[in-house]
Length: 372
Image (cartoon, rainbow, N blue to C red):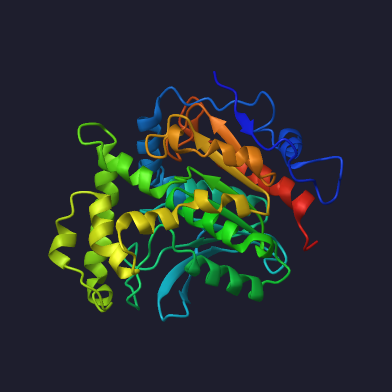
């Protein structure tokens, strides 16, 4: 059974309250799920990366009755500066104007109902955190109200949401949790903000790091099971475009709705629609610009990255290991199993990821929260 491995710089960032402690030994000492010798053991009923990944996506339906008993969301329709809108799904704790607020960005096909999102916000509520799931414009059946669609590196929307939350709840520490495509966006945002980042800490699960190479990897899986993920994401993108094409086609550029509908892969869809909507010369240019690995050197707050070695989407060869050896503010936790944001452990399949999430945030609030 593989022990969880923590990769970090030789001299990680110091605690703000105990100069004898640094980021890595705080995690070792105060996060039992990630401590030295800690292991993630996948359930024998969901063995391997593909099974773990598929189970995570199906988890909402498998545990639907259980989810009905959990905390309920209150929906806010957030208006962006360009006239666009997107749903913010809130679950508020007691004394929410002072308690931490955990902001969540999910994957490209994700919603507030995703199993892994629900497990994390249920655990957060138990610890008296408020949570808000920030959904992408034009997704999950929510119509666009401006021509601008979303894309994998669009940080402006999240930035506006964070600015608004910070102004409304100035005494509440802000935390960032993200998965998959949302992980890329949040990492890029934290790097862009640098020293001015309003988040106290971040957790990045199943990060793609290099969007162009990840999409090329998925598009190339013609006769392998990973092709299922490629087609699921592509169909989601096509449906989002179809639902919002009257708005998107208002952008003064040469988009062809028929070519977009016939795209055979994510890269082709990006070439025909997304890169044109945002004015890039090619899909590669947009995806290279959007890749969060280019912004990781500028991260100045404590951030934990969680990746699985059997992730069939964000594969091991695309993890920029060198970044974790040079930036003292980031740590990579590597598990042998877990798939793509699956992490189903125990005998009967049970979610694991919420435990290191809350443990890490609790420890970061003790050591790096400047709003005490």
